[in-house]
Length: 214
Image (cartoon, rainbow, N blue to C red):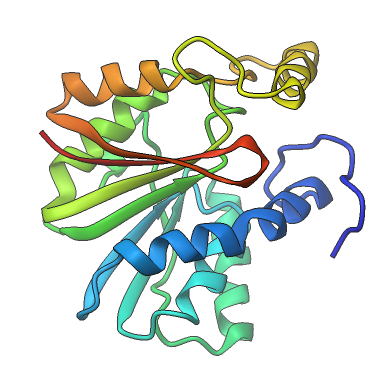
């Protein structure tokens, strides 16, 4: 869609987010093909944004119902329209879910997998606690949480690009914009009965982190 990286803009409908989503979606898909259930199941997406990932993945897993969610209610009609245009029958109606507000979390539902993509670099690390607590409540037995994005690897940058990206994020002056440390997510997981089960190196110095119940 874009041959060069557009200017940094983490708003869900921005050209930058479209570029980032297209850049990483196939690598993520290959990992998901190896870990998502092979039988009929339900998968939840935290922070679905424009819906770019849920609609791309859903067409590859016809036996799975995908449930997009986001904290921003204004994005839900956009996701719903994208579902209508796609013709996909395995994408559920989007829902509001704010990881900092437990009353918005699913009640009486279980999900076989949950994923969250490219969120932590533009969100406060405090949402990790809500993410892990919510996951521990609604994750089906044997299920997992998949978190993707750029992170500090236990206190160190994995590339000069990530170090520059972190400086760029911090210079924007927005609260919470910075690369977060995998160790911080692991601590939040431990406080909520979760554990890091797998850490996968991905293209562009990103990571795929898979958490399961401890």
